[in-house]
Image 1 (cartoon, rainbow, N blue to C red):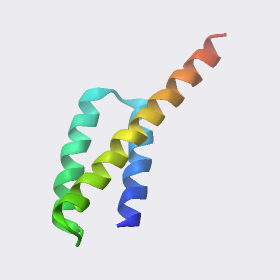
Image 2: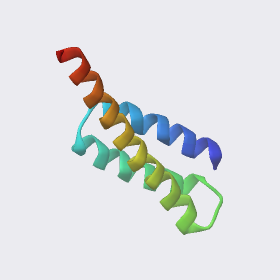
Image 3: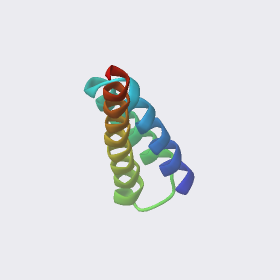
Length: 74
């Protein structure tokens, strides 16, 4: 369970720095589907925790990309 959250978080940061919302929607659907099928935990935890981690990591990646672009424009 921990490795799935870590790997989904890394994916979220990479998506945030490179892609926008449509890619996040696809990644969220794939994350919910694969973690729902592969992990062995209660249904709500095995789907909800990785999806929340993906969404939060995407926002962190988006913030990092914005800061990086603002710094390079100066």
